[in-house]
Length: 225
Figure 1 (cartoon, rainbow, N blue to C red):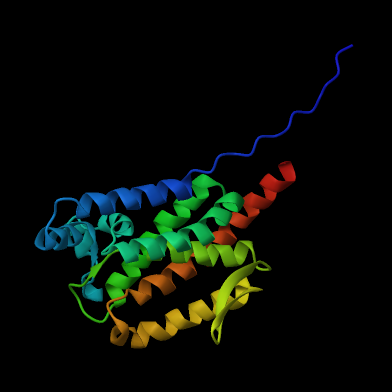
Figure 2: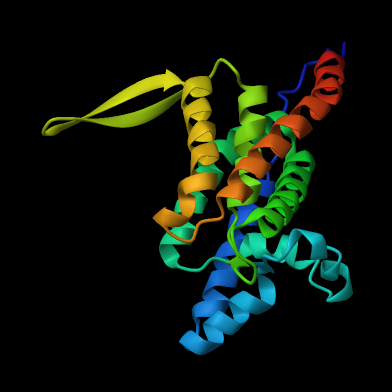
């Protein structure tokens, strides 16, 4: 007699977050290897997004710079810039990919990041500034994470005098504080260095909207499983 034995379902391999990290690392190594400061700045100008006058946004099409809204996501100005973005990519991208799937996460990062860079290019305080880094795409992941895991808790390290205490806090609270800071820094941010705060805020909002758009398909997929 043949008995039907249920096979153990193998977990799907998730590739989007590791691929994004590897591309960013590869681009940074390529730009840093054998290029002087002048060449490095030229590469940032070539592959980064550049801010401009809001009334002249259509020049992005004419000048062939529209694709730079995407390529800028993989270009980083310094090693610390790359490492800090990589940490946020791991914290929020990996669990979001488990919930969304690899293709949806890739679309979230690319579309959210490109729209975030576009918003920053239009709304930054002065034209001609170069916008680089994965922050816009990662901010979209943070927004999606809030929608997908509203009851999650995140671990943070809190200084307690001479000691560091590890505590867990609601993700909604921490992300809400983070989003509020991005809103504040969009207006006072130029005093704290050249950071594209508008890209963070715009990416976050795009991520929230896209996550809500993904939810019906995810619910159908869950019922089918």
